[in-house]
Length: 227
Ligand SMILES: Cc1cc2nc3c(=O)[nH]c(=O)nc-3n(C[C@H](O)[C@H](O)[C@H](O)COP(=O)(O)O)c2cc1C
Image (cartoon, rainbow, N blue to C red; front, side, top):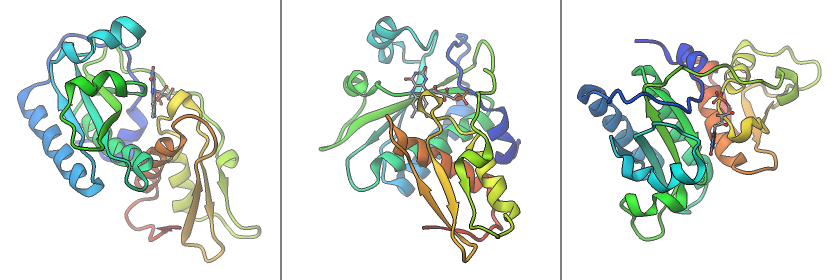
């Protein structure tokens, strides 16, 4: 199975899908992954398989994701950091789906529409969805900002390899409107990383996704901590 450090390179947003169904064994893996990250992230992500009804109004209104029949609804309440948690744990689920051979794409503005199709506890709402299935193509690499537009290290400090690798992995992450408004800054003690989300729609969720990618790029031995 492909390592996550490779998975982040092959993942691209896919907006047109074939009607090939997701096999049962892959569906079970996906559900296990969702259960794990729901516990860790205090979220209520919900898998909808072969459910064209969940897309109906949305597709005719917007027509963006053609042929899509499967999705993970990212459902959360508004307890602290909910926007970032939707991104961070959603990204983990998305990368697992990619690892299992599926194509994926994030969708915002799906919230209102999905309300009728998911189970909601008090205070919870669907915030985003990740569409998944077998794409007509696997998409293409997005245009990206450069490393030095989003990374800062203190003057005079040599950039640690793990920090550079982390930022480069973050630049491969999906962001809403491909805006890449995040920044990563290394503190002078050399192991604490500060982040900023920037201004724009969904930037906190984008930052959560980028942090997931950063951790994968930096690797398990980097030994850094988030500020
Ligand atoms: C939080 C979030 C919301 C998104 N919402 C939409 C959307 O509503 N419609 C859409 O076509 N793409 C959406 N995208 C996909 C982005 O446009 C896409 O990830 C970005 O252009 C980068 O391309 P890539 O995913 O191929 O790297 C969204 C991405 C993120 C991270």
